[in-house]
Image (cartoon, rainbow, N blue to C red; front, side, top):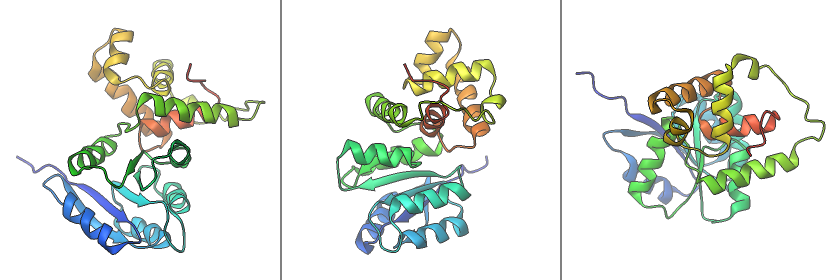
Length: 222
């Protein structure tokens, strides 16, 4: 039997003790910490070199902050899932992080089992956000969107009608099981559609698919 592929993780934080602690916590049978970065600029370089599946990113780092580093990484590697690890439990920071490309936002005091579960979650393309948090992000994007609602159809043209329907439900924060019940299909069918949407849009996870949809004016998430 072929061994299961380990999730490759890059840890970016300017405090060595934090990096060492995360490495110690995360090196398991299913997760491999492939590298560390102490600055935002180093995180960009290391991400290009190592091609991790998931990056744990601090927001405040020298040379380049976490948000700028994440933006640079996502431009080159949109499939990489980035989890922001922050000291601050602040919805404004969460919104800023997700709109900037993060798959999730966690506090540095998150227990080991929850952090490991979060890494597995985003590596599988799932969302870490609670429904209320996703709706806060959607609401902010709708307010910021240009009133002309000009639409770039490049990505949308590649989606089928069913995929567009499911994307609208993703924006609303429904789980695969809830969508399956609503559409009277199997959860595995919904999962396949969601995976196809993520692949076609060139994003890392369902959260960023929802962000894309709202930015493009394709749905209001109502």
